[in-house]
Image: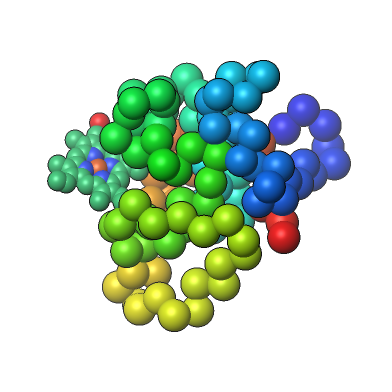
Length: 107
Ligand code: HEM
């Protein structure tokens, strides 16, 4: 993060980072954290890539259920099963290791 104050984005603000905005940046949110996937994730989330639907979005539900599902408002995830939560947390670990954290998703 550029400054010490935590950077927060709303769902609406996050949408601007789908790779097609003025910055060209691609952000993906997972478990409340926002990651910059622009460079290392171009082949996954870039234009025409298989998981482009997650660009500028909260991928938590999609990676819990392994479906290309996204919501544009706060998703409380309380309906997820234990197995789905485990899947989501396992992806979160991958993201944490692979991508740069740029901020946090807020309502
Ligand atoms: C036939 C089904 C699928 C196949 C064969 C497949 C295969 C793959 C492969 C080969 C990779 C690259 C792994 C790597 O190089 O690190 C990948 C990455 C990925 N897959 Fe799938 N996948 C499938 C379905 C799905 C579904 C249904 C989802 C989620 C809804 C999903 C989400 C992802 C994500 C998010 C990544 C990129 C992770 C990252 O950012 O590093 N995949 N997949």
